[in-house]
Length: 640
Ligand code: BDP
Image: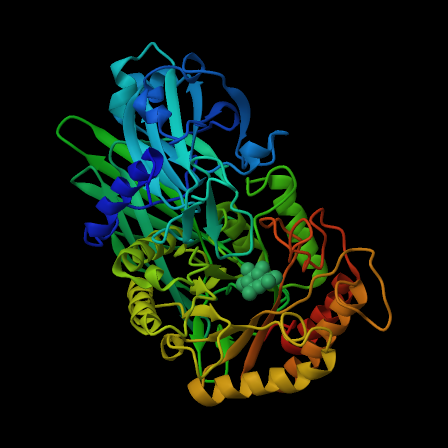
Protein backbone atom coordinates (compact mmCIF):
# COMPACT_ATOMS: atom_id res chain seq x y z
CA UNK A 1 0.00 0.00 0.00
CA UNK A 2 1.41 3.36 -0.97
CA UNK A 3 1.63 6.04 1.66
CA UNK A 4 1.22 9.53 0.25
CA UNK A 5 3.49 12.37 1.24
CA UNK A 6 1.33 13.91 3.90
CA UNK A 7 1.20 10.73 5.85
CA UNK A 8 4.87 10.11 5.37
CA UNK A 9 5.53 13.50 6.99
CA UNK A 10 3.44 12.39 9.90
CA UNK A 11 5.12 9.04 9.96
CA UNK A 12 8.55 10.60 10.20
CA UNK A 13 7.41 12.74 13.10
CA UNK A 14 5.81 9.82 14.85
CA UNK A 15 8.75 7.55 14.30
CA UNK A 16 10.87 10.07 16.15
CA UNK A 17 8.54 10.03 19.11
CA UNK A 18 8.16 6.27 19.01
CA UNK A 19 11.85 5.48 19.19
CA UNK A 20 12.70 8.12 21.73
CA UNK A 21 12.54 6.93 25.30
CA UNK A 22 9.71 8.32 27.40
CA UNK A 23 11.33 11.27 29.10
CA UNK A 24 9.76 13.28 31.88
CA UNK A 25 8.15 16.44 30.55
CA UNK A 26 10.35 19.47 30.75
CA UNK A 27 8.58 22.28 32.49
CA UNK A 28 5.12 22.94 33.81
CA UNK A 29 1.89 23.88 32.09
CA UNK A 30 0.31 26.37 34.48
CA UNK A 31 -2.91 27.89 33.19
CA UNK A 32 -2.02 31.37 31.85
CA UNK A 33 -3.02 34.01 34.32
CA UNK A 34 -2.80 37.76 34.65
CA UNK A 35 -1.08 39.17 37.71
CA UNK A 36 0.94 42.27 38.45
CA UNK A 37 3.81 40.55 36.67
CA UNK A 38 2.05 38.62 33.91
CA UNK A 39 -0.08 39.65 30.95
CA UNK A 40 -2.33 37.65 28.63
CA UNK A 41 -3.40 38.50 25.08
CA UNK A 42 -6.07 36.34 23.46
CA UNK A 43 -5.69 35.62 19.77
CA UNK A 44 -9.20 34.28 19.27
CA UNK A 45 -11.30 35.50 16.39
CA UNK A 46 -10.95 35.08 12.65
CA UNK A 47 -7.85 33.45 11.23
CA UNK A 48 -6.95 32.86 7.60
CA UNK A 49 -7.47 29.23 6.75
CA UNK A 50 -6.57 26.92 3.93
CA UNK A 51 -7.05 23.17 3.67
CA UNK A 52 -4.32 21.45 1.69
CA UNK A 53 -6.41 19.63 -0.90
CA UNK A 54 -3.43 18.42 -2.94
CA UNK A 55 -3.57 14.67 -3.61
CA UNK A 56 -0.82 13.90 -1.12
CA UNK A 57 -1.88 16.74 1.23
CA UNK A 58 1.73 17.83 1.21
CA UNK A 59 1.74 20.95 -0.93
CA UNK A 60 1.90 23.22 2.09
CA UNK A 61 5.24 21.68 3.11
CA UNK A 62 6.59 21.35 -0.43
CA UNK A 63 5.86 25.01 -1.09
CA UNK A 64 6.65 26.15 2.45
CA UNK A 65 3.37 27.99 3.04
CA UNK A 66 4.66 29.05 6.44
CA UNK A 67 7.32 31.24 4.82
CA UNK A 68 4.92 33.90 3.57
CA UNK A 69 1.41 35.08 4.17
CA UNK A 70 -1.12 32.32 3.61
CA UNK A 71 -3.11 34.55 1.22
CA UNK A 72 -0.05 34.64 -1.04
CA UNK A 73 -0.03 30.85 -1.36
CA UNK A 74 -3.56 30.51 -2.71
CA UNK A 75 -7.19 31.08 -1.76
CA UNK A 76 -7.92 31.34 1.96
CA UNK A 77 -11.18 31.57 3.88
CA UNK A 78 -11.99 33.10 7.25
CA UNK A 79 -12.08 30.55 10.05
CA UNK A 80 -13.13 31.22 13.63
CA UNK A 81 -10.79 30.20 16.43
CA UNK A 82 -11.64 28.39 18.62
CA UNK A 83 -13.91 26.06 16.62
CA UNK A 84 -13.80 22.86 14.67
CA UNK A 85 -13.58 23.74 11.01
CA UNK A 86 -15.83 20.87 9.92
CA UNK A 87 -19.29 22.44 10.27
CA UNK A 88 -18.42 26.05 9.48
CA UNK A 89 -18.88 25.99 5.71
CA UNK A 90 -21.32 24.42 3.25
CA UNK A 91 -18.53 22.34 1.75
CA UNK A 92 -18.83 18.59 2.48
CA UNK A 93 -15.20 18.05 1.51
CA UNK A 94 -14.12 20.35 4.31
CA UNK A 95 -16.50 18.68 6.76
CA UNK A 96 -14.97 15.31 5.98
CA UNK A 97 -11.44 16.52 5.24
CA UNK A 98 -8.46 14.37 6.23
CA UNK A 99 -4.96 15.80 6.23
CA UNK A 100 -3.24 19.12 6.83
CA UNK A 101 -5.11 22.39 7.23
CA UNK A 102 -3.33 25.69 7.70
CA UNK A 103 -4.28 28.57 9.99
CA UNK A 104 -2.60 31.95 10.02
CA UNK A 105 -2.95 35.22 11.81
CA UNK A 106 -0.88 38.35 12.24
CA UNK A 107 -0.73 39.98 15.61
CA UNK A 108 0.81 43.12 17.04
CA UNK A 109 2.90 42.38 20.07
CA UNK A 110 2.88 45.22 22.64
CA UNK A 111 6.10 47.23 22.26
CA UNK A 112 7.03 46.78 25.91
CA UNK A 113 6.98 43.00 25.58
CA UNK A 114 9.56 43.38 22.84
CA UNK A 115 11.78 46.03 24.34
CA UNK A 116 11.91 44.58 27.85
CA UNK A 117 14.49 41.80 27.66
CA UNK A 118 13.38 40.65 31.10
CA UNK A 119 9.98 39.65 29.72
CA UNK A 120 9.37 36.20 28.38
CA UNK A 121 6.69 35.89 25.69
CA UNK A 122 4.97 32.54 25.28
CA UNK A 123 2.61 31.37 22.55
CA UNK A 124 0.10 28.84 23.81
CA UNK A 125 -2.51 26.72 22.07
CA UNK A 126 -5.18 25.31 24.41
CA UNK A 127 -5.65 22.37 22.05
CA UNK A 128 -5.66 21.60 18.34
CA UNK A 129 -6.71 18.29 16.86
CA UNK A 130 -4.61 16.23 16.16
CA UNK A 131 -1.00 16.94 15.18
CA UNK A 132 0.17 20.55 15.12
CA UNK A 133 3.22 22.40 13.85
CA UNK A 134 3.65 26.08 14.73
CA UNK A 135 5.77 28.73 13.00
CA UNK A 136 6.32 32.35 13.97
CA UNK A 137 7.47 34.60 11.15
CA UNK A 138 8.32 31.53 9.12
CA UNK A 139 10.42 29.84 11.80
CA UNK A 140 9.23 26.65 13.39
CA UNK A 141 8.74 27.08 17.14
CA UNK A 142 7.10 23.85 18.21
CA UNK A 143 5.11 20.79 17.24
CA UNK A 144 2.75 18.68 19.28
CA UNK A 145 1.02 15.37 19.03
CA UNK A 146 -2.41 14.96 20.61
CA UNK A 147 -5.68 16.73 20.14
CA UNK A 148 -6.85 17.60 23.65
CA UNK A 149 -4.04 19.07 25.68
CA UNK A 150 -2.22 22.40 25.58
CA UNK A 151 1.18 23.11 24.12
CA UNK A 152 3.32 26.20 24.03
CA UNK A 153 6.55 27.75 22.84
CA UNK A 154 8.61 30.64 24.07
CA UNK A 155 8.94 33.11 21.23
CA UNK A 156 10.68 36.05 22.94
CA UNK A 157 13.88 36.03 20.89
CA UNK A 158 12.02 35.50 17.62
CA UNK A 159 9.76 38.50 18.02
CA UNK A 160 12.73 40.64 19.02
CA UNK A 161 14.42 39.89 15.70
CA UNK A 162 12.00 42.08 13.75
CA UNK A 163 10.54 44.35 16.40
CA UNK A 164 8.59 46.66 14.11
CA UNK A 165 6.81 44.01 12.07
CA UNK A 166 3.57 42.32 13.09
CA UNK A 167 4.16 38.79 14.21
CA UNK A 168 2.83 36.14 11.82
CA UNK A 169 1.66 32.93 13.45
CA UNK A 170 1.10 29.90 11.24
CA UNK A 171 -0.34 26.67 12.61
CA UNK A 172 -0.68 23.55 10.49
CA UNK A 173 -3.00 20.90 11.94
CA UNK A 174 -3.45 17.33 10.75
CA UNK A 175 -6.38 15.19 11.92
CA UNK A 176 -5.09 11.88 10.55
CA UNK A 177 -5.33 9.04 13.04
CA UNK A 178 -3.06 6.01 12.86
CA UNK A 179 -2.54 2.86 14.91
CA UNK A 180 -0.22 4.81 17.20
CA UNK A 181 -2.31 7.92 17.80
CA UNK A 182 -4.73 8.42 20.70
CA UNK A 183 -7.43 7.80 19.73
CA UNK A 184 -6.17 5.33 17.14
CA UNK A 185 -7.46 4.94 13.59
CA UNK A 186 -6.29 3.65 10.24
CA UNK A 187 -6.11 5.11 6.76
CA UNK A 188 -7.45 2.73 4.16
CA UNK A 189 -6.88 3.10 0.43
CA UNK A 190 -9.59 1.79 -1.85
CA UNK A 191 -7.62 0.34 -4.70
CA UNK A 192 -10.47 -1.12 -6.76
CA UNK A 193 -10.46 1.33 -9.67
CA UNK A 194 -13.85 0.09 -10.88
CA UNK A 195 -15.41 1.46 -7.71
CA UNK A 196 -13.19 4.28 -6.50
CA UNK A 197 -11.23 7.04 -8.19
CA UNK A 198 -7.44 7.01 -8.06
CA UNK A 199 -6.06 7.82 -4.60
CA UNK A 200 -9.40 7.34 -2.79
CA UNK A 201 -8.88 6.74 0.89
CA UNK A 202 -10.93 6.75 4.08
CA UNK A 203 -10.14 7.27 7.73
CA UNK A 204 -11.37 4.30 9.79
CA UNK A 205 -12.03 4.87 13.47
CA UNK A 206 -13.33 2.68 16.24
CA UNK A 207 -15.01 5.27 18.40
CA UNK A 208 -18.47 6.74 18.34
CA UNK A 209 -18.01 10.49 17.93
CA UNK A 210 -17.21 12.72 15.00
CA UNK A 211 -13.48 13.27 14.60
CA UNK A 212 -13.81 17.04 14.81
CA UNK A 213 -10.63 18.91 13.93
CA UNK A 214 -9.02 22.33 13.99
CA UNK A 215 -7.95 24.72 16.71
CA UNK A 216 -10.40 23.83 19.45
CA UNK A 217 -9.30 26.02 22.33
CA UNK A 218 -7.91 29.51 22.79
CA UNK A 219 -4.65 30.63 21.30
CA UNK A 220 -2.87 33.05 23.60
CA UNK A 221 0.24 35.08 23.96
CA UNK A 222 1.23 35.54 27.55
CA UNK A 223 4.17 36.89 29.40
CA UNK A 224 6.12 35.92 32.45
CA UNK A 225 9.27 37.46 33.82
CA UNK A 226 12.41 35.79 32.47
CA UNK A 227 12.88 34.14 35.84
CA UNK A 228 9.45 32.77 36.66
CA UNK A 229 7.29 30.33 38.52
CA UNK A 230 7.17 27.42 36.11
CA UNK A 231 5.10 24.84 37.95
CA UNK A 232 3.27 24.30 41.21
CA UNK A 233 2.02 21.03 42.70
CA UNK A 234 -0.18 20.74 45.75
CA UNK A 235 -1.39 17.78 47.75
CA UNK A 236 -3.89 18.22 50.52
CA UNK A 237 -4.89 16.37 53.66
CA UNK A 238 -6.60 17.06 56.95
CA UNK A 239 -6.95 15.71 60.43
CA UNK A 240 -9.84 16.74 62.63
CA UNK A 241 -10.13 20.49 62.11
CA UNK A 242 -6.68 21.07 60.70
CA UNK A 243 -5.93 21.03 57.00
CA UNK A 244 -2.54 20.56 55.40
CA UNK A 245 -1.43 21.81 51.99
CA UNK A 246 1.87 20.37 50.87
CA UNK A 247 3.32 22.26 47.94
CA UNK A 248 6.23 22.20 45.53
CA UNK A 249 7.17 25.10 43.29
CA UNK A 250 9.64 25.00 40.45
CA UNK A 251 11.29 28.12 39.14
CA UNK A 252 12.87 28.45 35.73
CA UNK A 253 15.64 30.67 34.61
CA UNK A 254 17.22 31.87 37.80
CA UNK A 255 19.30 31.53 40.86
CA UNK A 256 19.12 33.23 44.22
CA UNK A 257 15.37 32.88 44.32
CA UNK A 258 13.19 33.84 47.23
CA UNK A 259 9.77 32.23 47.27
CA UNK A 260 6.99 33.37 49.56
CA UNK A 261 3.84 31.31 49.71
CA UNK A 262 0.68 32.73 51.21
CA UNK A 263 -2.60 30.92 51.62
CA UNK A 264 -5.76 33.00 51.79
CA UNK A 265 -9.34 32.01 52.41
CA UNK A 266 -12.23 32.70 50.05
CA UNK A 267 -12.62 36.22 51.39
CA UNK A 268 -8.97 37.04 50.94
CA UNK A 269 -8.03 36.74 54.61
CA UNK A 270 -4.60 35.44 55.53
CA UNK A 271 -4.55 31.78 56.58
CA UNK A 272 -0.96 30.57 56.51
CA UNK A 273 2.40 31.26 54.90
CA UNK A 274 5.67 29.59 54.14
CA UNK A 275 8.96 30.12 52.31
CA UNK A 276 10.96 28.05 49.90
CA UNK A 277 10.30 25.77 46.99
CA UNK A 278 8.57 23.07 48.99
CA UNK A 279 6.83 22.88 52.29
CA UNK A 280 3.55 22.63 54.10
CA UNK A 281 0.83 25.06 55.10
CA UNK A 282 -1.26 24.32 58.16
CA UNK A 283 -4.88 25.44 58.03
CA UNK A 284 -6.61 25.83 61.35
CA UNK A 285 -10.40 25.39 61.30
CA UNK A 286 -10.16 24.11 57.77
CA UNK A 287 -13.03 24.49 55.34
CA UNK A 288 -12.92 21.38 53.23
CA UNK A 289 -13.67 21.16 49.54
CA UNK A 290 -16.94 19.24 49.25
CA UNK A 291 -18.86 18.03 46.19
CA UNK A 292 -22.06 19.73 45.15
CA UNK A 293 -25.05 18.38 47.11
CA UNK A 294 -22.81 16.67 49.66
CA UNK A 295 -22.46 19.77 51.78
CA UNK A 296 -24.22 23.09 52.13
CA UNK A 297 -21.06 24.95 51.09
CA UNK A 298 -19.57 22.97 48.18
CA UNK A 299 -16.46 23.82 46.16
CA UNK A 300 -14.66 25.83 48.84
CA UNK A 301 -11.40 27.16 47.45
CA UNK A 302 -8.46 28.77 49.15
CA UNK A 303 -5.99 30.83 47.12
CA UNK A 304 -2.31 30.03 47.25
CA UNK A 305 -0.24 33.01 46.21
CA UNK A 306 3.26 32.15 45.09
CA UNK A 307 5.53 35.17 45.06
CA UNK A 308 9.02 35.02 43.59
CA UNK A 309 11.90 37.45 43.80
CA UNK A 310 15.01 36.44 41.91
CA UNK A 311 18.18 38.44 41.92
CA UNK A 312 20.85 38.10 39.28
CA UNK A 313 24.07 40.15 38.94
CA UNK A 314 22.33 42.69 36.78
CA UNK A 315 18.62 42.54 37.49
CA UNK A 316 15.90 41.65 39.90
CA UNK A 317 12.86 39.71 38.73
CA UNK A 318 9.52 39.46 40.43
CA UNK A 319 6.72 37.03 39.60
CA UNK A 320 3.43 36.01 41.15
CA UNK A 321 1.01 33.19 40.44
CA UNK A 322 -2.14 32.41 42.40
CA UNK A 323 -3.42 28.85 42.45
CA UNK A 324 -6.92 27.96 43.70
CA UNK A 325 -6.61 25.14 46.23
CA UNK A 326 -9.36 22.87 47.50
CA UNK A 327 -8.50 20.84 50.57
CA UNK A 328 -9.89 17.35 50.38
CA UNK A 329 -8.88 13.70 50.41
CA UNK A 330 -9.80 10.74 48.22
CA UNK A 331 -9.66 7.13 49.37
CA UNK A 332 -10.99 3.91 47.97
CA UNK A 333 -11.86 0.80 50.00
CA UNK A 334 -13.14 -2.56 48.72
CA UNK A 335 -16.65 -1.25 48.71
CA UNK A 336 -16.55 2.53 48.90
CA UNK A 337 -15.31 5.68 47.23
CA UNK A 338 -14.50 8.16 50.00
CA UNK A 339 -14.21 11.92 49.73
CA UNK A 340 -13.04 13.48 53.00
CA UNK A 341 -13.51 10.03 54.55
CA UNK A 342 -17.24 10.02 53.74
CA UNK A 343 -18.81 7.65 51.21
CA UNK A 344 -19.39 9.42 47.93
CA UNK A 345 -22.00 8.20 45.44
CA UNK A 346 -21.57 9.42 41.85
CA UNK A 347 -24.91 10.49 40.35
CA UNK A 348 -23.78 12.04 37.16
CA UNK A 349 -23.37 12.14 33.43
CA UNK A 350 -20.97 11.42 30.63
CA UNK A 351 -20.44 14.34 28.33
CA UNK A 352 -18.82 15.33 25.09
CA UNK A 353 -17.38 18.65 24.02
CA UNK A 354 -19.85 18.89 21.18
CA UNK A 355 -22.36 21.35 19.80
CA UNK A 356 -23.93 22.64 16.60
CA UNK A 357 -21.66 24.60 14.27
CA UNK A 358 -18.76 24.83 16.75
CA UNK A 359 -18.14 21.07 16.83
CA UNK A 360 -15.64 20.62 19.62
CA UNK A 361 -14.68 24.32 19.78
CA UNK A 362 -14.56 25.98 23.17
CA UNK A 363 -17.69 28.07 23.79
CA UNK A 364 -18.51 29.85 27.07
CA UNK A 365 -22.31 30.11 26.55
CA UNK A 366 -22.47 26.35 25.99
CA UNK A 367 -20.28 25.59 28.99
CA UNK A 368 -22.27 27.77 31.37
CA UNK A 369 -25.55 26.38 30.02
CA UNK A 370 -24.29 22.84 30.59
CA UNK A 371 -23.35 23.64 34.18
CA UNK A 372 -26.79 25.13 34.78
CA UNK A 373 -28.39 22.01 33.33
CA UNK A 374 -26.21 19.74 35.42
CA UNK A 375 -27.13 21.59 38.59
CA UNK A 376 -30.80 21.53 37.63
CA UNK A 377 -30.53 17.76 37.17
CA UNK A 378 -28.86 17.26 40.52
CA UNK A 379 -25.65 15.97 38.95
CA UNK A 380 -22.69 15.77 41.33
CA UNK A 381 -20.15 14.36 38.86
CA UNK A 382 -19.20 13.67 35.26
CA UNK A 383 -16.64 11.78 33.26
CA UNK A 384 -14.68 13.59 30.56
CA UNK A 385 -15.62 10.94 28.01
CA UNK A 386 -13.53 10.37 25.90
CA UNK A 387 -10.70 12.90 26.15
CA UNK A 388 -9.54 15.71 28.45
CA UNK A 389 -11.86 18.71 28.43
CA UNK A 390 -10.86 22.37 28.45
CA UNK A 391 -9.16 23.46 31.65
CA UNK A 392 -11.72 26.23 32.11
CA UNK A 393 -14.34 23.48 32.55
CA UNK A 394 -12.31 21.88 35.33
CA UNK A 395 -11.93 25.27 36.99
CA UNK A 396 -15.71 25.57 36.99
CA UNK A 397 -15.98 22.10 38.49
CA UNK A 398 -13.59 23.17 41.25
CA UNK A 399 -15.74 26.20 42.02
CA UNK A 400 -19.10 24.41 41.85
CA UNK A 401 -18.04 21.18 43.50
CA UNK A 402 -18.71 18.97 40.49
CA UNK A 403 -16.60 15.82 40.77
CA UNK A 404 -14.68 14.71 37.67
CA UNK A 405 -13.37 11.41 36.39
CA UNK A 406 -10.65 12.72 34.10
CA UNK A 407 -10.30 10.54 31.02
CA UNK A 408 -7.48 10.58 28.52
CA UNK A 409 -8.14 10.08 24.78
CA UNK A 410 -7.47 6.33 24.98
CA UNK A 411 -10.70 5.43 23.23
CA UNK A 412 -11.17 2.90 20.45
CA UNK A 413 -8.08 0.81 21.23
CA UNK A 414 -9.47 -2.26 19.54
CA UNK A 415 -6.78 -3.32 17.07
CA UNK A 416 -4.13 -5.59 18.53
CA UNK A 417 -1.45 -3.51 16.79
CA UNK A 418 -2.44 -0.56 18.98
CA UNK A 419 -1.12 -2.44 22.02
CA UNK A 420 2.45 -2.35 20.73
CA UNK A 421 5.24 -0.38 22.40
CA UNK A 422 4.89 2.57 20.04
CA UNK A 423 1.31 3.10 21.16
CA UNK A 424 2.09 2.45 24.79
CA UNK A 425 4.92 4.96 24.91
CA UNK A 426 2.71 7.65 23.41
CA UNK A 427 -0.07 6.76 25.84
CA UNK A 428 2.39 7.22 28.73
CA UNK A 429 3.34 10.66 27.43
CA UNK A 430 -0.33 11.62 27.18
CA UNK A 431 -0.83 10.61 30.82
CA UNK A 432 2.24 12.71 31.75
CA UNK A 433 0.71 15.70 29.98
CA UNK A 434 -2.73 15.13 31.45
CA UNK A 435 -1.53 14.77 35.04
CA UNK A 436 0.78 17.75 34.62
CA UNK A 437 -2.16 19.90 33.51
CA UNK A 438 -4.87 18.65 35.87
CA UNK A 439 -3.07 17.51 39.04
CA UNK A 440 -4.08 20.52 41.12
CA UNK A 441 -7.82 20.43 40.49
CA UNK A 442 -9.69 19.30 43.60
CA UNK A 443 -12.63 18.32 41.38
CA UNK A 444 -10.55 15.64 39.65
CA UNK A 445 -10.92 12.54 41.82
CA UNK A 446 -9.83 9.74 39.49
CA UNK A 447 -7.87 9.20 36.27
CA UNK A 448 -9.34 7.08 33.52
CA UNK A 449 -6.62 5.83 31.20
CA UNK A 450 -8.94 4.44 28.50
CA UNK A 451 -12.46 3.71 27.39
CA UNK A 452 -13.53 0.26 26.28
CA UNK A 453 -10.18 -1.01 25.04
CA UNK A 454 -10.08 -4.58 23.72
CA UNK A 455 -9.12 -5.61 27.23
CA UNK A 456 -9.77 -9.25 26.50
CA UNK A 457 -6.74 -9.38 24.18
CA UNK A 458 -3.62 -10.92 25.71
CA UNK A 459 -1.40 -7.81 25.32
CA UNK A 460 -3.91 -5.76 27.32
CA UNK A 461 -2.54 -7.05 30.59
CA UNK A 462 0.98 -5.74 30.13
CA UNK A 463 -0.31 -2.57 28.52
CA UNK A 464 -2.66 -1.62 31.34
CA UNK A 465 -0.39 -2.77 34.13
CA UNK A 466 2.31 -0.46 32.75
CA UNK A 467 -0.07 2.40 32.09
CA UNK A 468 -1.81 2.26 35.46
CA UNK A 469 1.42 1.85 37.44
CA UNK A 470 2.89 4.79 35.53
CA UNK A 471 -0.13 6.95 36.30
CA UNK A 472 -0.03 6.00 39.98
CA UNK A 473 3.62 6.93 40.11
CA UNK A 474 2.77 10.33 38.63
CA UNK A 475 0.03 10.94 41.18
CA UNK A 476 -0.14 8.97 44.39
CA UNK A 477 -3.25 10.74 45.62
CA UNK A 478 -5.87 9.60 43.12
CA UNK A 479 -7.22 6.21 42.10
CA UNK A 480 -6.84 5.03 38.52
CA UNK A 481 -9.28 3.14 36.34
CA UNK A 482 -10.11 2.35 32.79
CA UNK A 483 -13.63 2.00 31.54
CA UNK A 484 -14.46 -1.50 30.42
CA UNK A 485 -17.24 -3.19 28.51
CA UNK A 486 -15.73 -6.64 28.75
CA UNK A 487 -17.11 -9.39 30.94
CA UNK A 488 -15.28 -9.82 34.24
CA UNK A 489 -13.76 -13.16 33.29
CA UNK A 490 -12.43 -11.80 29.98
CA UNK A 491 -10.88 -8.57 31.16
CA UNK A 492 -7.09 -8.76 31.40
CA UNK A 493 -6.41 -5.35 32.93
CA UNK A 494 -9.01 -5.65 35.70
CA UNK A 495 -6.57 -6.57 38.49
CA UNK A 496 -4.80 -3.22 38.15
CA UNK A 497 -7.69 -0.80 38.48
CA UNK A 498 -8.70 0.77 41.81
CA UNK A 499 -12.35 1.10 40.85
CA UNK A 500 -14.23 -1.00 38.30
CA UNK A 501 -15.91 1.30 35.78
CA UNK A 502 -18.18 -0.85 33.65
CA UNK A 503 -20.33 0.13 30.67
CA UNK A 504 -23.27 -1.96 29.56
CA UNK A 505 -26.06 -1.64 27.03
CA UNK A 506 -28.45 -4.44 27.98
CA UNK A 507 -31.72 -4.40 26.02
CA UNK A 508 -30.09 -2.12 23.47
CA UNK A 509 -27.16 -3.62 21.58
CA UNK A 510 -28.20 -7.10 22.73
CA UNK A 511 -31.65 -8.53 23.35
CA UNK A 512 -33.18 -5.59 21.56
CA UNK A 513 -36.48 -4.45 22.94
CA UNK A 514 -36.28 -6.90 25.88
CA UNK A 515 -36.32 -4.59 28.85
CA UNK A 516 -37.38 -7.55 31.01
CA UNK A 517 -33.88 -9.09 30.90
CA UNK A 518 -32.15 -6.09 32.44
CA UNK A 519 -32.52 -6.99 36.14
CA UNK A 520 -31.05 -10.47 35.70
CA UNK A 521 -28.24 -9.55 33.33
CA UNK A 522 -27.20 -6.42 35.17
CA UNK A 523 -27.08 -7.95 38.59
CA UNK A 524 -25.17 -11.00 37.33
CA UNK A 525 -22.74 -8.65 35.66
CA UNK A 526 -22.15 -6.72 38.91
CA UNK A 527 -21.85 -9.83 41.05
CA UNK A 528 -19.26 -11.29 38.68
CA UNK A 529 -17.16 -8.15 38.77
CA UNK A 530 -17.31 -7.87 42.50
CA UNK A 531 -16.56 -11.53 43.12
CA UNK A 532 -13.55 -11.36 40.85
CA UNK A 533 -11.92 -8.07 41.90
CA UNK A 534 -13.46 -6.95 45.20
CA UNK A 535 -13.42 -3.33 44.08
CA UNK A 536 -16.16 -0.72 44.20
CA UNK A 537 -18.12 -0.56 40.94
CA UNK A 538 -19.38 2.40 38.94
CA UNK A 539 -21.86 2.02 36.09
CA UNK A 540 -19.83 4.29 33.88
CA UNK A 541 -22.25 4.17 30.90
CA UNK A 542 -25.75 2.90 30.21
CA UNK A 543 -28.52 4.31 28.08
CA UNK A 544 -30.66 4.11 24.98
CA UNK A 545 -31.13 6.30 21.91
CA UNK A 546 -34.32 8.35 21.89
CA UNK A 547 -35.40 10.47 18.97
CA UNK A 548 -37.02 13.49 20.62
CA UNK A 549 -40.76 13.53 20.04
CA UNK A 550 -41.01 9.85 19.16
CA UNK A 551 -43.58 8.12 21.40
CA UNK A 552 -44.92 4.62 21.75
CA UNK A 553 -46.57 2.77 24.58
CA UNK A 554 -45.82 -0.03 25.32
CA UNK A 555 -42.34 1.35 24.71
CA UNK A 556 -40.37 0.59 21.58
CA UNK A 557 -36.73 1.29 20.89
CA UNK A 558 -35.87 4.87 19.94
CA UNK A 559 -38.90 6.36 21.67
CA UNK A 560 -38.70 8.59 24.72
CA UNK A 561 -40.75 5.97 26.61
CA UNK A 562 -38.20 3.24 25.86
CA UNK A 563 -35.31 5.41 27.02
CA UNK A 564 -37.17 6.09 30.26
CA UNK A 565 -38.13 2.48 30.84
CA UNK A 566 -34.60 1.27 30.23
CA UNK A 567 -33.16 3.79 32.68
CA UNK A 568 -35.77 2.83 35.24
CA UNK A 569 -34.85 -0.87 35.00
CA UNK A 570 -31.21 -0.06 35.50
CA UNK A 571 -32.04 2.16 38.47
CA UNK A 572 -33.88 -0.65 40.22
CA UNK A 573 -30.74 -2.78 40.15
CA UNK A 574 -28.51 0.14 41.17
CA UNK A 575 -30.68 0.66 44.23
CA UNK A 576 -30.26 -2.97 45.24
CA UNK A 577 -26.48 -2.83 45.02
CA UNK A 578 -25.99 0.68 46.32
CA UNK A 579 -25.39 -0.26 49.90
CA UNK A 580 -23.05 -3.07 48.97
CA UNK A 581 -20.23 -2.15 46.57
CA UNK A 582 -21.96 -0.05 43.94
CA UNK A 583 -20.75 3.55 44.14
CA UNK A 584 -22.04 5.41 41.14
CA UNK A 585 -24.06 5.82 37.98
CA UNK A 586 -23.21 7.97 34.99
CA UNK A 587 -25.81 8.15 32.25
CA UNK A 588 -24.78 7.89 28.60
CA UNK A 589 -25.15 10.66 27.57
CA UNK A 590 -25.82 14.15 28.86
CA UNK A 591 -26.71 15.41 25.36
CA UNK A 592 -27.05 14.09 21.81
CA UNK A 593 -23.80 14.43 19.90
CA UNK A 594 -22.41 14.10 16.39
CA UNK A 595 -20.86 10.89 15.12
CA UNK A 596 -19.58 9.70 11.77
CA UNK A 597 -22.24 8.67 9.31
CA UNK A 598 -23.47 5.09 9.53
CA UNK A 599 -26.58 2.98 9.63
CA UNK A 600 -26.61 2.90 13.45
CA UNK A 601 -26.79 6.66 13.81
CA UNK A 602 -29.52 9.10 12.77
CA UNK A 603 -27.54 12.34 12.42
CA UNK A 604 -25.50 11.45 15.46
CA UNK A 605 -25.92 9.56 18.69
CA UNK A 606 -29.30 10.16 20.30
CA UNK A 607 -28.64 8.73 23.75
CA UNK A 608 -28.70 12.22 25.22
CA UNK A 609 -31.22 13.02 27.90
CA UNK A 610 -30.99 16.49 26.37
CA UNK A 611 -30.99 17.15 22.66
CA UNK A 612 -27.85 18.54 21.08
CA UNK A 613 -29.48 21.96 21.51
CA UNK A 614 -29.83 21.22 25.24
CA UNK A 615 -33.61 20.79 25.41
CA UNK A 616 -34.86 18.05 27.75
CA UNK A 617 -36.26 14.71 26.64
CA UNK A 618 -38.59 12.87 29.04
CA UNK A 619 -35.57 11.07 30.53
CA UNK A 620 -34.16 14.35 31.82
CA UNK A 621 -37.14 14.70 34.16
CA UNK A 622 -36.89 11.08 35.29
CA UNK A 623 -33.23 11.51 36.07
CA UNK A 624 -33.76 14.82 37.80
CA UNK A 625 -36.23 13.27 40.18
CA UNK A 626 -33.90 10.41 40.91
CA UNK A 627 -30.75 12.50 41.35
CA UNK A 628 -32.36 14.89 43.81
CA UNK A 629 -33.70 11.94 45.76
CA UNK A 630 -30.23 10.36 45.76
CA UNK A 631 -28.72 13.66 46.85
CA UNK A 632 -31.00 13.68 49.85
CA UNK A 633 -30.36 10.04 50.69
CA UNK A 634 -26.62 9.82 50.07
CA UNK A 635 -25.41 13.38 50.02
CA UNK A 636 -25.41 14.28 53.69
CA UNK A 637 -26.51 17.76 52.82
CA UNK A 638 -26.15 18.84 56.42
CA UNK A 639 -22.74 19.82 57.76
CA UNK A 640 -21.10 17.13 59.91
C1 BDP B 1 -20.15 3.00 24.37
C2 BDP B 1 -19.03 3.98 24.05
C3 BDP B 1 -19.56 5.36 23.68
C4 BDP B 1 -20.68 5.21 22.68
C5 BDP B 1 -21.79 4.37 23.29
C6 BDP B 1 -22.98 4.18 22.35
O1 BDP B 1 -18.15 4.09 25.14
O2 BDP B 1 -18.52 6.15 23.18
O3 BDP B 1 -21.17 6.43 22.19
O4 BDP B 1 -21.26 3.11 23.53
O5 BDP B 1 -22.95 3.23 21.58
O6 BDP B 1 -19.78 1.69 24.24
O7 BDP B 1 -23.90 4.99 22.37
